Image 1 (tube, rainbow, N blue to C red):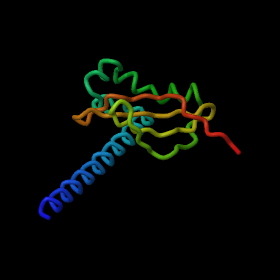
Image 2: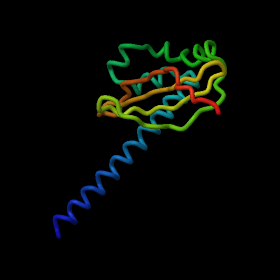
Image 3: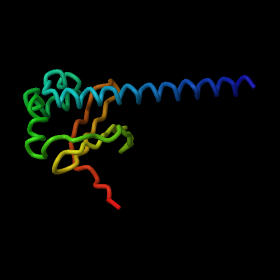
Image 4: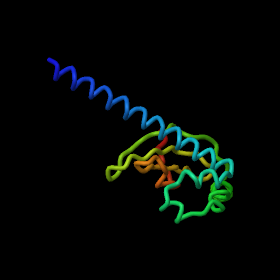
Length: 129
């Protein structure tokens, strides 16, 4: 009986920890998107891991959102944040409705909580009925 109670407590702690981690990653993802939209590349740059920092500069992040809106038009809305797993990596994403093309904003974080992925890709188009 004691083993069952112990296992139940361990499972509860694991579920709670997972939910808290996912909530934190959603919050960081939302913050990253807002920083992009606000042109705050330096602050966003500090949230990236070292490999991501080598791939992009703070200056590039400063102008990324304005470049996206020049290419795809105004962002007219967004979907809900979702999570998927790819190669044992949890990825948070949200679909953004730009005037000409829907885009999906993806983020993922390393074990230290730093972003190792920040990407825009075409969002799947949902068929209209």
